[in-house]
Length: 223
Image (cartoon, rainbow, N blue to C red):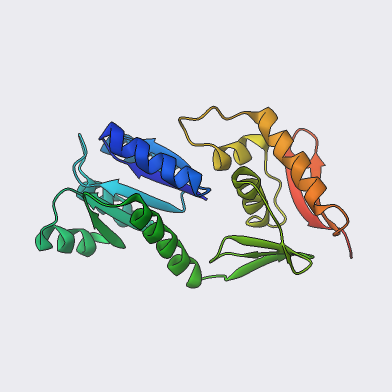
């Protein structure tokens, strides 16, 4: 899953980005409200973490623009201001959670996961492709009823494929899900992750099919 982090304090932004990447998320980190607004209009995110005190366009204004466009992705607001009126303003504008600085990274990670679980609980709870089952709320794959061990980036690739049944995804689309905007998006690395996933899915009837020049498709070949 891909998260947008909008925080203009470099040290705080890097700490949050590292913590979320270690938890298996792809993170795009931006420091400017206007740039973040453009990113939210052009990219697909599972969640946004927005600091209130941003340059050019503050977090409240950014949130207001997001909600006025009808975008419903969950939003967590970060701020050094812990007053009740600030929390009320953010929540009234459509924020889903509010975390005052300073905070523990473990708490932020737990809140992010809780927001995603809550959002997913309102829709589908699981997705399936043959013997491969994906539980959205837990972000957990199982194959033939057994847990499927995956690295964070293998998980991101397989999530992208199972989330778009019947659709071919290009290397570029997969790379956008796996790598953040400040990471080098290696298309060769996508081939490596696809190769590893094929080995882990071997014998299950679930296959990642290559469409030359187009990309990859997850299919159940047992029927």
